Length: 226
Image (tube, helix red, strand yellow):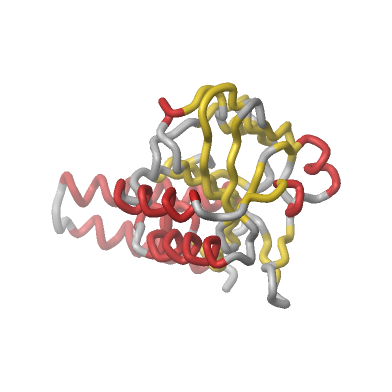
């Protein structure tokens, strides 16, 4: 399932993130890549152990905790601390697959990367190119969102970032270990939760909403690993 989560960050939060990024040190993005990804990766990143990365990451994680659509789509168990990248002057990231297991820097903990996420921090008209292209069974999907919006998609998806030919593309990216590892099951639960919300809006306080909600949670109990 590919889902867009709008307004994860407010315009004020985006502006603050960009101010912090403007004074951060940028390094070769291949520093955090596996062998295969490093062959096709050409961008820059903020050092993941820097004070700026920690400040930015805390801002994003706090926003995610308050975002009901993200919670519904991802059913998060653990979130990898966000990383931050920059593309300009033709920089790109060729087609690749994210590692299935990620070690959280500075800790003994690992997460399974069920879901990949990209949070856009540049406005679409500030740069040309830079689309995130995600492949699934239905073809390729090109994503270029307003600043503050995010896309989440299965970590098992092949994907790439097209060359940035004008301006600068700034983004945060991270991974989520979901309580429900199977993408098909997560999609079913997401669709059911969205349908329940629609029924509740059309028929406020109808008894069917309680019955459907009961079905949702019983399905979640069957699927979840916590």
